[in-house]
Length: 154
Image (cartoon, rainbow, N blue to C red; front, side, top):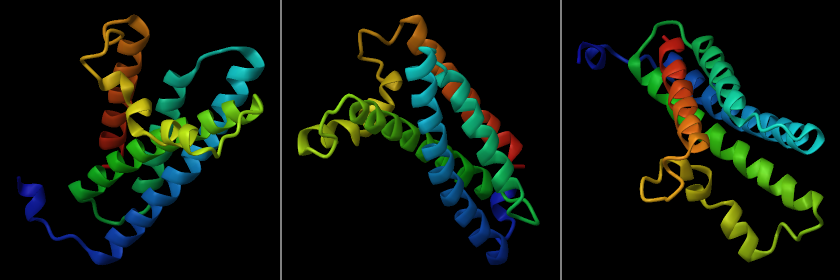
């Protein structure tokens, strides 16, 4: 717990928060659009790789935003990673339905698309699909991305 005893410098904290929010939104939108393009064009499911790509961009951006390390910066990086993953899935779903001429902005469909339980359904232990290989791989890659973000922001 020694790291929490260190002071957090305001001149470091605000750029880290700004960078975390910015890169979460930008990488989520960009990677979601690339994921949609790759899946629709080539039929390849590469979400596992895209989660690691998001972790790489977030860790690099946050590491460049501070002068002196504090553990709070790694925690901000984890939150930015989770937000970017959610935005990636929302971007993908909106594009997926839009390409099929389905009214994306109907209330019923927006409730489904914006529901975070859909984006993070691989965490649901009660699901009958929890022990399938694809779900386990997605869970492992998500955790690897989270750990990578935490470690590389130091």
